[in-house]
Image (cartoon, rainbow, N blue to C red; front, side):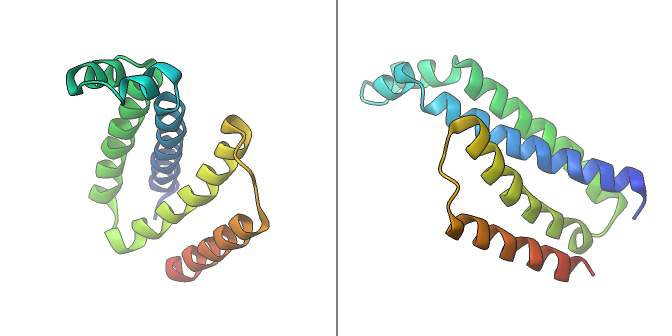
Length: 122
């Protein structure tokens, strides 16, 4: 694996993490929450005009585009274990930006995922 391919993998995973945080932020918005209890059309319009939701979806599309580039360069069996790094990024970003609690159980579970990623990638 080249350094460029590894960089693309990390960028793709980080965009996926950012997408999760943006989508959660957008869907937690008061107007979105209120719209979820209304008719489908109003809920649809409110959700898909929320800046965080739209940015989160754009981050996912960008992540997928970069991932396609990664898959054109290396075997999926070598690339996919790195997706597990997203668990770490999502946990940390949720703690920093969404004020979600960082419990010992979450940390240990995430470290186990990291250990699995390291084992599979060897």
